[in-house]
Length: 251
Image (cartoon, rainbow, N blue to C red; front, side, top):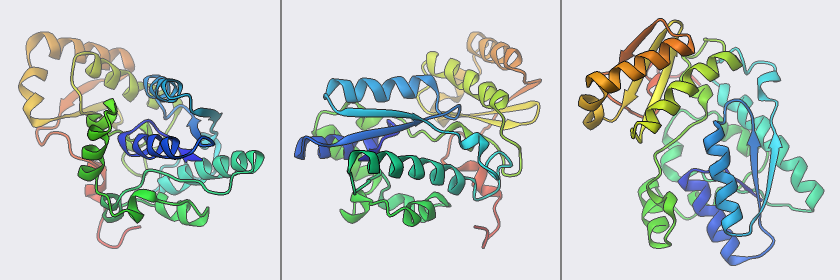
């Protein structure tokens, strides 16, 4: 079984696994933190390859501790995911569950890795010593369209630690991100700061975002979503920007 989020890492693992054997099963946990577009992309990927695919509801929002958004929030999320995967695997008589963790992930703040260890999840890409660049190159060589898919994390990562996560707030950031992607911005993050919407795009995309037509549409969408103010982060997109506030030694 492959825990499949639709990103390039898990897509590469799933594709290679399915090429090697016929009994591979993909599992995608569905919750308000997963945008509809990502879910549909997962379905399309597995359908095109005739891979068995189980979409299972995740109740992470109901897990004690998750909605409070502590700095180890990902542990709660991944614990729910891997518990679901392990239960589904038992029903199917499957022992091994793999994910798309790669060697670059090992150096970031990722409490979810502890949950993976607790549930005996295997990391084929780590075992192969593959970095994100390695995976993208290999996926491109295999002809996977996902090889250059922008990095994506679940919508709960858009909230500063300690800021409560609710379905309404997930919808707020998700709707603005959806518009930005419709407008052609490939790598985007919309960070939630109460009534302030902080947008991150690639530095090269900053000029286009502040153009009158685009800026007006984004501001209107943010206001319709419930934000009072719309701001642009001049540093641009960078992975895990909300981890920048963590002090050394935080876990």
